[in-house]
Image (cartoon, rainbow, N blue to C red; front, side):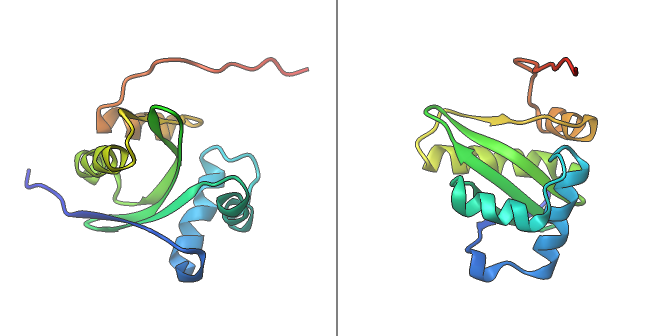
Length: 133
């Protein structure tokens, strides 16, 4: 299979397009607990998340943050991402290295995300479980 072309570009809020909002809204359906696209944009400002646009052979958005040792993928949504998983992994590793981080960690809150991250080559390291009252 030929390699895929993927571009990941950090977005300023002033450059957010309708298509970016559409993909941000999809994050709610894969585990963002009722947060709208506007809520997530507010989190970019208030919580220091970085918003990225994915383009090329796939398209979408990516939310990231930094921990002491890792680039943390808080969420990803888009179209055609699965077929570009290897190229996305390579780009994320480059972003992590440029930020001075050793590795990439991904938040998994939905089975679709888990499958995607596994396709990228990620391995599970922990589980968060909840007891409802």
